[in-house]
Length: 354
Image (cartoon, rainbow, N blue to C red; front, side):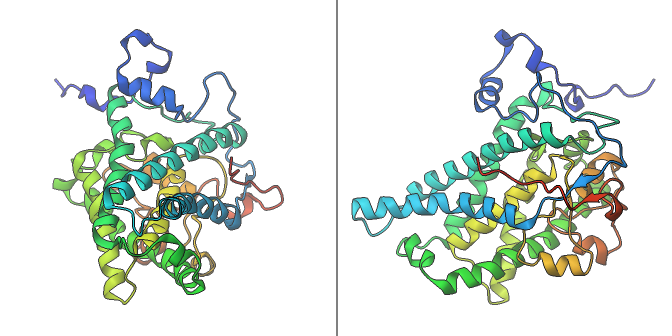
């Protein structure tokens, strides 16, 4: 007799239509934040694989990330100016940027829901997007807090200088010039470390058990971005960003807190989009996009979607910010819907700010 399936592996999602008297605080948290990937009472367009895919330009994404990256910096500076204090303490900085990080991601999920109802989803003619599983509501709710909290705590510990107010960097043209280089390189370097850790999780038998939970979803949605076990969470939230910080520092590019904050916003924006499955041609916003595109190593949403859809232990498309390392090490997969002849460059998609 075969082994019985583990109930914790179930991806059945019925709780949104179920009895709310049985909900836990985690169910109510997701409800109150309205972080659903679709509205149950609204239609989702379904496309054939050959239907045109609208392109989403870089400038629209850069604008979105920069605008919301600047909000906590401006609030930070406004508090200093209003109170007359010379610095904000680390605990207060953590609370401010932690709250901003979470609110930005929640707002992004709201925007993605609207775009999903407008453009539909990849592979939508075969399968709808997976919902938050009945057995994983608490895990999903806590993942948001753990992901943002750990990254901010690490950045504050390693790079925050209380004596440097936000205005000192925001009014420096040199800082803005360096920021362009740092945000572009950060994604590439981070993806190198992510690629090898991610590939090892698939290729090394002993490590697979730490990653398999994340692959229970074949058609992920934004809330499943961090749906994983503790070991994977540690690498995603702490180890990979730390190795990226150390690598850039070793090459003469030490990240200050404000630069690292902006880098985190670019990375998180892409991570959430990458699990949305929305049917647009979107490459992660990068100041090095022109170079990645030149060598055909830019990432699109479909790449990571195929990683989930068609992969299990052995798969491909291990990168999550670029396809550079997949291309170099021979682990790219052919796209299905996001091929060049299928792209609509006339009717562009955009990311609304509000």
